[in-house]
Amino acid sequence: MQSVAKPDLLSQLYELPDKLSPEQAKQLMEETLRAYEDHIDRFLPLYVRVLGEEMLEWRAEGAWLYSPTGERWMDCLGAGGVFGLGFRHPKVVEAVKKQIDRVGLSSRLFINPVTAALAKKLAGLAPEGLDQVFFANSGTESLEAALKLARLASGKPGIVGTYYGYHGMSIATLSISGLEAWRKGTEPAVGGSAVIGFNDIEQVRKAVTKDTAALVLEPVQWASGCEVATTEYLKAVREHCDKVGAFLIFDEVQCGLGRAGTLWGCTPSGVIPDILCVGKILSGGIMPIAAVVYNAKVRYGERDRPQFNNSSYGGNPMSCAAGLAALNVMTDDGVLDRAIELGNKLGAILDEWVKKYPKALKSHRGAGLMRCLEMKQPSMGSVMQDYARKRHVIVASMMHMPQFVRVSPPFTASDEEFDFFLKAVEESLEEISRMSLMDLMRYNNDFGKHAQQVMMQLAQDRAAEGH
Ligand SMILES: Cc1ncc(COP(=O)(O)O)c(C=O)c1O
Image (cartoon, helix red, strand yellow):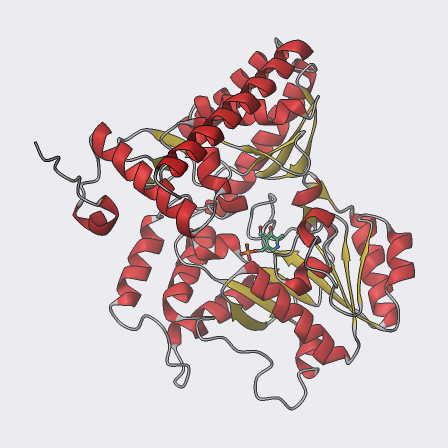
């Protein structure tokens, strides 16, 4: 009997229902994994294969990510803090739908009112004096634009960043971030770039000189385990930059817009940069957008150019509609206040847990809803990530420093949802506290062995197909 070929689900995605049968889900999973492996990337699909769970984004709503069969996880990590408003916030969705029925992308020859409205709103929220806006498509692009602006405005070459700073994956942003693993193979770094220690004013005084265009800092630096810049440091940095005539750039792509428990990461210090980069939450979790907000000193430096930068898509009407709706929800619907409230609650609970689970939790760092749990042992990070996920909460240990587990819950979580997240993390901490070093070793070894088996099986399957 001739076998009937299964339909190719990837070619009929929008004919499929919101909930799939287990068989359809399995088929869709395999087709998706296969297309990733063949055309996109092998690492992420391998991770999904090894875990063997239905980690296939099918629908998303509020705090929750749903698989095709309807299994759900509360996303408390979301693309490094993008989902402050959760997934598909109704007001952001509505604004984007309305905008798409008017103008989607811009001709870039005419002006557009929604782009103007977002610039006005953002300038109104930015720290004092920062009222000039350039829209970019991603955080990385906003940092690139900020560096370009600083060089144009100062006429100087030097750009300085900090170890464990993260500003994106382009060559210039990698040149001012201090993680060797990210930079490796992309060298040489951009001329004039330097990297120094974070929260160390003496290093700033040495490295930031009369030849420096800009120093770039994150007020809360996630990649070193959500390290918070001290107020004394930021004040001294501001003073030194003014003294030598260097611009100060704050990368608030992640810590800004309420994530770190205040409107801006720099708000508690009272220190205002010359250039502020904003991203992630500005998207409303719907449309990619980032922005550079800068002051008149920097603007003056644009000199007589008609434009200092350009992009086909930057500041497009759909992204600006999402950004405007997101900012309105933050300011008018009490979402910023909710972020502050939940951030304070999380900080207090983490303080308690450090005392209650000393065998698992060494400390915690960060601010607001941008936190890192520092586990007692590096091997505990991945266990924490797995245990929380088994309890349907997504958090992640850092690949380059696995003792740190990042948590970035949505600001819009209800009390019940926030308690669900806390319960999953606390139960995981309890379980890890009961593990001996031997148990931990066994857990991680078993995972390694299983990963190897999966890789071997995959290689055999591919060989059998003639690949
Ligand atoms: C502080 C910071 N800056 C810049 C970026 C780069 O942003 P994007 O991934 O949107 O390019 C990120 C992304 O995680 C970030 O956390």
